[in-house]
Amino acid sequence: MNIAFFLIPKNEVVYMPLNSTMRQALERMEYHRYTAVPLIDELGKYAGTITEGDFLWKVKNTPGLTFFDTERILIKDIPRRMTNNPVHINSQIQDLLSLAIAQNFVPVVDDSGIFIGIVRRREIIEYYAQLIKNSSSHELLTDSHD
Image (cartoon, rainbow, N blue to C red):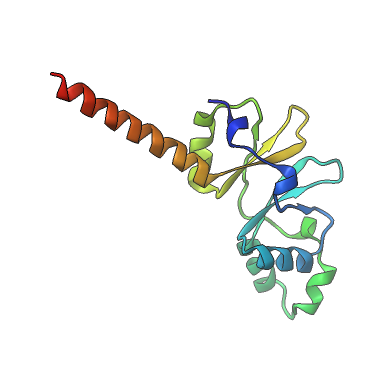
């Protein structure tokens, strides 16, 4: 099944431009209660994902950093500890499974690398759970006819 069926489009996704500040990202993530958000460059291309952990390590490794100072730190200057790989819109749901193991969401890009949305881990799990349920029901029906 094509992932377009599961896509949450960009206009419904919380993301941050790379030139945003650490403070802007922290406040947006707190407001939406997210632990990670996609990053978009000035051309609209997917540029990575920033996480709470990335902010924590930045604070730990920057002596004297206060919350007030976070408005002077750009997201693009914060090291990211994980690489969340995107998939292309023409990918199949099977292509997402291995990525969803390590990521809360999988970024989706078009052929030019432009960010067009995400597929959440939840939808992937629900899809496979339904497959298992349907498969189990089919096995029950088949076994009862033997």
